[in-house]
Length: 109
Length: 113
Image (cartoon, rainbow over all chains, first blue to last red; front, side, top):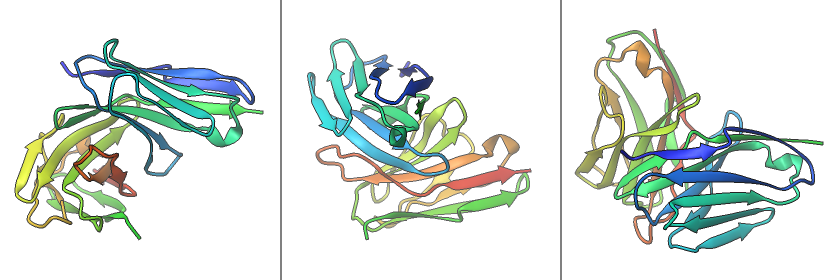
């Protein structure tokens, strides 16, 4: 069965702190995506990870992919309020795309 | 401006009344897809299309139909909507090579009474 699991589902952080969101998937894939969704809005692409060991960084966010462990991480460094949103990982299994349930991140002052 | 558009944005209808949600993209993308978003479930893929006249089922296709007669358009059809199809629907498109990220439409909030 094709499954994508994200942890945690809810995350409340203080500004300035670091944290990691985890995305596990059940079957071999070498294409993983991270998206951001603000309340009431559509999804916006953050990262595309296409190979084992891929690491991408944009501002305070860094994403990595370990295809052998079937694990991707989204690391948040020195969180700021503007990062409050829901973050989704999505994994491509052939032409099927499966999303995790999302991690709702709240950054508090 | 590169974009994916959906219409309508909001729709309230009754059980059994056929409806179509349109999706159009202006980026010449080959791949298009429909998702539904429900609380706690993330996004679930309904149907996708690799190119014109090529469509395939996603994770939750029951009760939905699609067509891809033109590259830019990918309408979602609910022949006989039921209340369990009340959801937020997103259309997305992407260039197939090299497996680029998807661009999402603004969403259509559908309520079936």
